[in-house]
Length: 317
Image 1 (tube, rainbow, N blue to C red):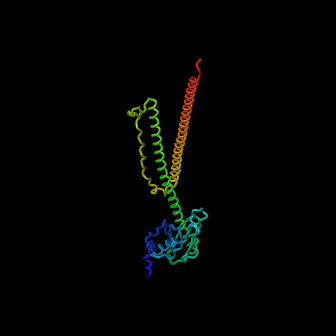
Image 2: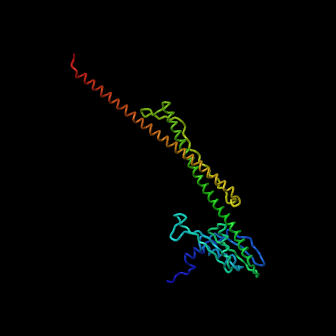
Image 3: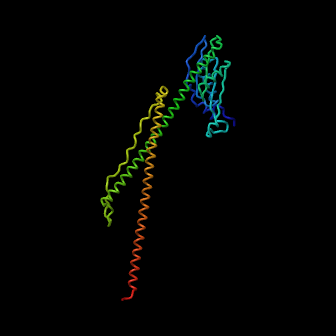
């Protein structure tokens, strides 16, 4: 049996089924004496992803109008060989590199721009369409300007994504904590109402009557608290990239709300613990008191019997 063609293998299917790389940002064109410069930045966490992005840009995006040079650089934070990344920062290493694609020294210029902006897990590709006139050192200025533009946009995008993730995570946590608090408050209210009914019944002399008569209970039944209404999911994505200050204020507000709910939960738990200990002490005291009464009764009864026996045995005067 012959091996299946590569295009029919599972690996090939998975590879081809991936969506094409999409640039996170594209710079404005810079035109100088017939040459055109434009930069694109893609997310790329591995060298394979770097190569895939560059190939897509060269062969697909620019396929109809190939660029003279597709110079690029990349910086990726990867786990070290044999490491899982769960052991801490020391299990990671920075993988970086560049390619000139015929435009000497250009790749390293792009890499330095990425380093200056702290661009990570990305590849920056600066495409040049040569116009027939050599530009000299000016070409490096254009390359760096295009690269800096997309690096700045990429940095904002990364920060926006981090803020969005933080906000949605805090929102979910706050919903769960508030639901837990509402449930515990309802349980506490039910317990307090039941205890109040028992106390009222004892005070009024209501108890189970002998002879199988009906039992009368005092007080109204306690209704369960209403379930919290699910709030509409905020649309942070529609504005977060244009207002980081507002997003940071919301993060701080969510953190304070979570802290307040956790404090309320801790207070309820502390009160429940104190009441449980007090109830246990009351029961222990009642048991001790019952034992003392029983013991005293037994001693009295024994004394009475002994006294009666002594009187019987005594001779008449």
